[in-house]
View 1: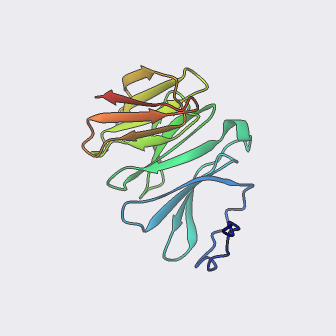
View 2: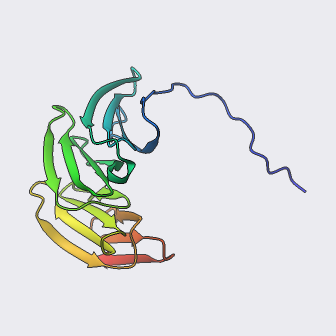
Length: 177
């Protein structure tokens, strides 16, 4: 029988210390120069990957893991980062200025995703629906809401014409936009 124990890999090239109790999600900017992290203290942080240092804390919350921004995503052009989580509004920030950009009504229990052209932001929420909501990323106007039994993950097709959502029921729902 084969040995299935994990073997240690090489050590990390760099370790970024968030001073939080845990990191929920990370996302690289499209050019790879910036990393966004979301932790269970409601902080969305930006990191310079070359220097290995934190450059901004975009969101500071209550520290309540039940109200934390636990997912992050970059817009395709890398100018905007979204942070979302349970029992908090989905929000975006300008990456260059670190200023809040748009706040979207509603939280998410799962992932967020920008459409390939950056025009739309989608989020799935299993706790309050379950639903998948698509907003105009610039105005926060709700464009579509899809009721489903999904709520953990969401993704746009590369051409932006379809949206997929998957969740705890073991199904993937596909919607034509």
